[in-house]
Length: 152
Image (cartoon, rainbow, N blue to C red; front, side):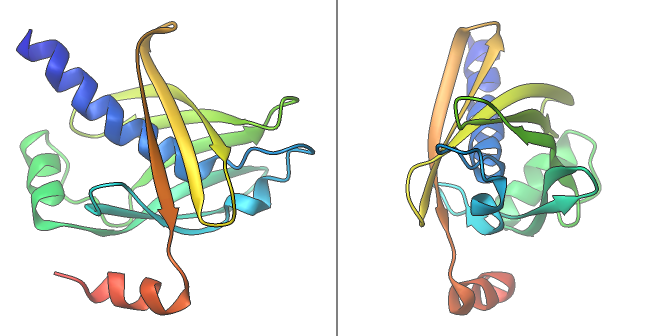
């Protein structure tokens, strides 16, 4: 049971990150997701941007706890790590790509939908459409982005 709780907790982080990287609306304009986003617990901030032919998400800030959890799993740091990879717009307006979860040492498939200019919902599943989790991420504005990079 503890394993499943751990997987779901990590998946939650991954899915949240996925949400950051995935703008969903009619037309599939992935650039709507570009910018810096924070997860619900404000422990990770990702910059979503173009990375060649696809969209990716790179950690620009992480809390001390998030960094410690990543180190326990074997990662040297979260800052600068690409957690969202190869995100592309889908016909239904969602985004789909791969999410690297450092604490589990796995890469999962995730989707995301931009709900409005400030919020994005991410979803990920451990096995097919079983054991799914979703989170709502929040876009940080220019002033908040600068403050978040200096946040403890």
